[in-house]
Image 1 (cartoon, helix red, strand yellow):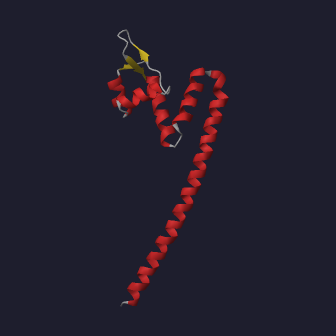
Image 2 (image 1 turned 45 degrees about the horizontal axis):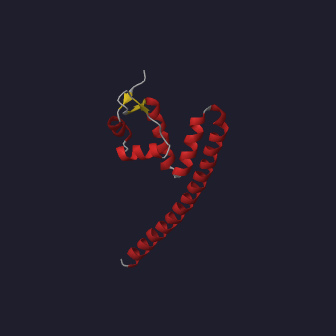
Image 3 (image 1 turned 120 degrees about the vertical axis):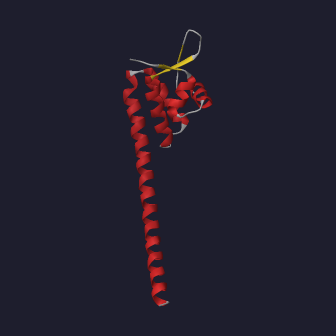
Length: 127
């Protein structure tokens, strides 16, 4: 069964403010249906889609790229390959960021080990 949510309900469900939802609509990221009173009404499909948008944002995809992805999604099945390619490219960017972060972590671990040894050396010297 498909549920319909008002913008207030949808805001609570997604953790996004009403202004953010309206901004996403202006940017073409979401396109909620309108009810008979011309009020926005969101569905479970919108909920799934907004969670994906949030994940793309959280992983650093720029709004411009998310907008392009949304346009492709709206165009339907003929764009499946292009959408997949966008995600593959984004994953590559993430892989590079993860590798860089792992290198930074390794250098921090080395420095922490240095300090542990130095503290131990100083403590043993002062005995």
